[in-house]
Structures are given as C-alpha cells and as structure tokens.
Length: 136
Length: 292
Image 1 (cartoon, rainbow over the protein chains, first blue to last red):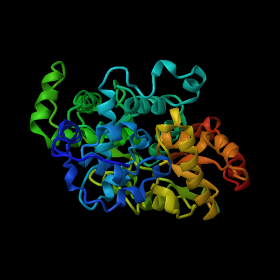
Image 2: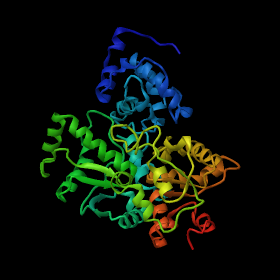
Image 3: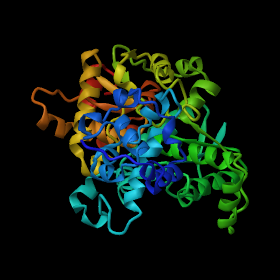
Image 4: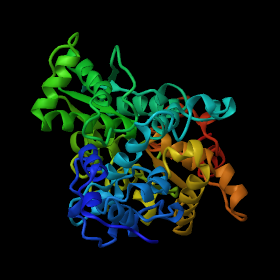
C-alpha cells in the first residue's frame, strides 16, 4: 500500500477529530500489536487494530474509510484493557465509526431495513446495541 | 435485605428466565430485589465517545430513580445493563463540568451527585451473602453436572468497573462449587461472543461462539453458565446456525447462573422458564436427576 505522508496530514483535521471524539492521544501507541493479537474479531478484519491506529496516527482518513475493521469491532474492550500504553483502542474504534455516522445517510445498518422475522427472533438488547453502533 | 432492582428491557421478554429465576433464588438467601417503579432503557452499550453526553442521560435517569427510592445502591442482573449504568456513573463522577451540563439538561430531575453504587447480583452473593450461606441453602446439589462458567465482556471490562479479575475471574466458579457442580475451567470464558454483530454479521458470531463452545466441550463441559441475555442469545440460539456452518458440531444447553441456583435450591421448576431456551436443557438435567 502506498501512503503519502505530510505534516498537513499528520497534524490535520482527521487526526484532531479522532482524538477529540475518542479523548485519546494517538501517538501514545508504539505499535506492539498486543491489541491485534488478542482481538476476538481480527479474523474478519481487513486491517488489524494496531494497523488501524498506525493509519490514524498518520492521518490516513481515506484509507481508513475503506476499512471494515471498526464495523467488525465488537466493543468487547479486550484491546483496551491489555494495551501497555493505556490507549483506549475501543474508543478510537468508536470515534472512527462516528466520523462516518455523523455524516448524512451513512448508516451501516438501517433500522427500517431489518426484516420482520429477524426483529421477532432477536432480543431487544441485540437490536438496540447494534443500532447504537451501526447508525447515527 | 431489600435492594432496588433494575431489570432492563430484555429481562421482561426473551430473558424472563433470568429474571424469574434470579428473583426467586435471591429470595431464598434473604435478598429482596424490588423492581424500580419506573425505569427506562439504559442504552445497552456505554457510549465510548467524549462528546456524546445525550447517551449518558438514559443510564443516569435510572440511577436517579434508585435515589428516589431512598437508596444509594441499585442491583442488576444483565451484564450489559450493569456495565452501562456503572460506567455512566463513573463518567459522571470523573468530570465536574459534564456533570453540571447533564444535571442542567435534566432540569425536571433532582440534581444527581453520582452517589448510587451499581452492583451485580454475583457481587452480592460473594461479598454480602457469602458462598458458605449459598451452600447451606442448597437442597439438591448439582452433583456430577459439569458446568463451564462464561463471563463474556461486560461484567469484567474495563477493570475499574469489573466485578472480578478481568483475565482470571473466579466468582462464578466459587458459586457453582457452592451449588455442588463440577466446575470446568475454560480459557474462552472471557472471550467475546460476537455481541451485536448477531444482527447484521451473524457469521462473525457463529465463528466466535463455535470457538467458545467447542473449547468448553473439549474440556468436558456439559452446560455453560452465564449472566448476559445477549451472550445467551448468541451462545444458545445461534447454535442452529453453527450446526449449519460446522459439520459435526454437537449442541449443548446454556443456562443462566440463576437457573442453576434455582435448581440447587429445589425451587419450583416454573421459575426457570426452561421453555425459553433454544437448546432444551431438560433432558440433561433429567438425566442427572436434577429435575423430575
């Protein structure tokens, strides 16, 4: 993957936005990979959690917009509690979801599109938590 | 001991088995869980963003409802409600400016100071009742029943609100031993079940739960015990999908820890609401002589 770095990007709007929403300092991450090693959903992610953080540090918003990682994230907090640098990775994943969801018509799951038989089968706890993570 | 109780939405529908068995079993131990006269959905997941104060309102309102009952404590059964209420209170206490903003926004409510402690029933059993007293209440020990406790995420993480050690919890093991069960230790007991992906990425849940259940089975478990209605849905109902995805997968029953308490205390079987289980636990329980 070719990545173009510049001061404008690394200190740009995208980094500021992610840091503001998550309350995390992205540069605290020193890329040890412990989050990726313990992630129970990494098998389905196209970019591993530690690589997501690296791309975010470098201001690569366009690359990250293509990734599925933060939509696959389970918010299980395993990465967060194991990070040796105290980075709350789950909060960064949430910020990346919100960067998309706070734009118009960018919901990952539409409540109105869920089929009735699925709504009948699922407990409320599944529907509410999913829509909290996947829609704005 | 009387304590205000917050059920949460799912305990009134698909997880009625958790609520009914818990209330009946706690009563045996002298714990009267009194449902809040009024409550609302906690939001199910704690908001992980700094600037999203509106999602803290739901859980905080429930804590105010507990305050109105003259209590500084609130007990929960659902792991997700526990996590959301407890973390919202932690957030509320940590930041004075945001606390003021939330209080001002809820101008029809009394000002809240962050002084309601959210507890899970497992904590009350361990810290206030004690496992000796639980053991003394057992009339029908779960002898020979091989149970693997499954904690999932929301009872344990993050550590600041967890009810036990986040990597090596033991509270459910201690409870199950007090009930007379044979405890099966399993390395997947704190691994996520796939959570809300069950709505639009069922395949992720199928993979996660297959790992969890086959690991427990490989260690000799006959049944899994848990406390979260979302874990329960994924571990129990999604077994039908696991069977389709993995040839040779054997189904197994999944029970709430409170159902196992109710069985061991020899309570009326109706409080266990076994009919709500997707994988019927009754054949196994009958074969062990635990139910008629």
